[in-house]
Image 1 (cartoon, helix red, strand yellow):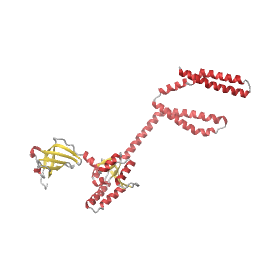
Image 2 (cartoon, rainbow, N blue to C red):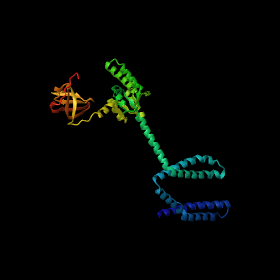
Image 3 (spheres, rainbow, N blue to C red):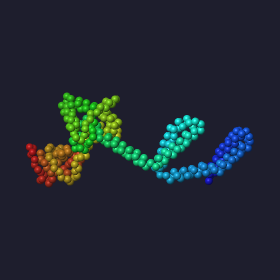
Image 4 (cartoon, rainbow, N blue to C red):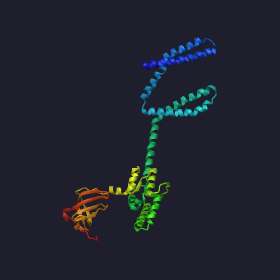
Length: 359
């Protein structure tokens, strides 16, 4: 009720002023009845404002509000998008339409804006579902394609190349795509292969052999790429910069590089972690077969290794040196160097299968 009263009062003032100006204009035009026309215009404007202001302001506003409230969110978005597109198109056609002569130059831009906005909103409302599905599909396809492209390219570090197990992983088909070897990594590998130190020279040559093996593989390709990085000297810093810029995962065995890359949100594929994850799961009480190859630190202990390199410490195994025995797992110990298994002979070694050194 208060809103209607306020609307009527404001309408009376505005229409009264408009009527006053209209009456004054008529009196100045015809040079007669100045006071009568101005007062009559003002009074008529006040009456019109009091009677019709709610019908031309509040009623349409309530109608539009109810219409918007009943619309779905998707329809509201479509209306907003259609209105924005219509206003942009209207602004583009306003300049040539204003060049029309006399009355047309003033009326045509407004008429064109109304028509264009109406058409744009109508099209957006009628086809908004198809448009939303189209853009949603394009976004999903684009995202999936980008993820697929990023997941199919891997940066190879020198440590992973020298380690050599990356070639075995690639040969299994679990790793597909392209292995990127930056030119600076290849130069570092060549410098290691040319080292005067025999051990380093052997490691470098092994890395070159691994690259040759990878190039002959059927599941992955090896690409030597050039990246020009100014201001970065060390190899690890260059790898991190490239991986961060292009969202490439880094394949490495370097502990420090792994930690720094993870802290910067870069995906790292660590061969050591992969090997650790693929080690067979053993529980206390399980029986395994192991070959005792050396003495343990404690009295009467023997030490053997599983195929994956896991150390097995066997209580009472010293007497079974160079023999393959059945043992029962007693406990597992996870250390920074890897996993250790403690076991004891099954039935005090009655099931031992002696194997000679020659065998």
